[in-house]
Image: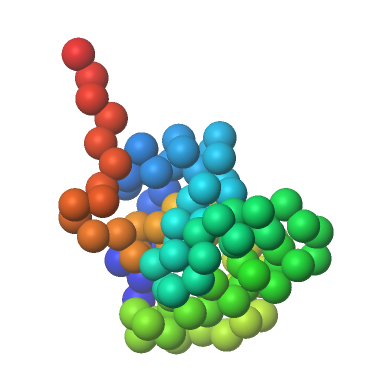
Length: 106
């Protein structure tokens, strides 16, 4: 199971906001967490069709490394219908406590 549900994107509000405005950054960092190039994947995010392959591939690698059941079809459908939520879910899965984004309020 994923640490956070698909609709748990507000569990880390900082990642949620970053993903909303810069989804390429979140995708690049998710890819980096599974051994891919952050910059290359961040740029690939803007290439139609190639981005689908990359997004599904990265989600699959995150799933496999965490022992989460699923397949490429479910990964594709998740990103097609809940893209931003899926990016945040993946970011929360691969983050370490020291990487957690904190919004400071005064």
